[in-house]
Image (tube, rainbow, N blue to C red; front, side, top):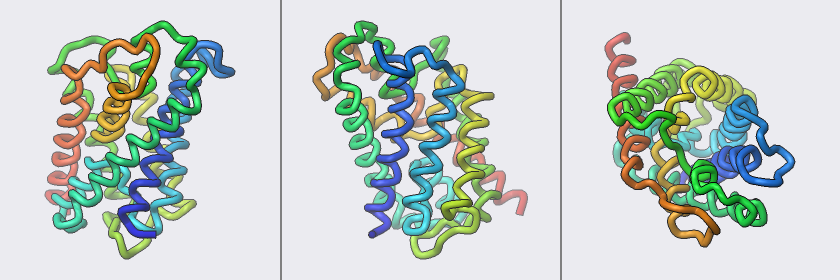
Length: 242
């Protein structure tokens, strides 16, 4: 399997399980309806574990342009491969969102709340204030990328299984994402990953979904810019501390 395919499949699994748990909690007549925030954050954390387990030995399992860019800024990943990885991640996120729609098709049909349908696919602010919203995404992504440097020893490369990111080593990153969701996710839904939001948001706009409403493109720049800024700050601080 190529690094491109590993990033695509790993991100697909991440979004399938992450958006899937949101669908299970928010859509009408599911077994997990009204399961709550603990269920959602746990599902996302386990989705991270699954994605890393599959992609880690091949690509290093970035699964997130913020991680890819942060590692490149820190000199731990080749800039020549950045766009290649991001394209794979975006396609994987779109495919994962499509599979969630397919899986929960009947429940999308039974759900009349446009906000709940949109929330299955992408993030949104609890309180719409773009300054504090982007600050939330910057802080969340900073924590993610800064800690990943120390979990992996910044050894994420396409040709080497990174320390801390094998099948067992995926556990620390899963716990990290779980912690971010529980502690920092209440403001914007903790995208902390540009393609996690953009890929499914594109699918929300394209797919035929009853009562889906708008895709809220006015907000879409926040979960793209915020994580990239947070990752850049994390990388620069990491370099400063070396």
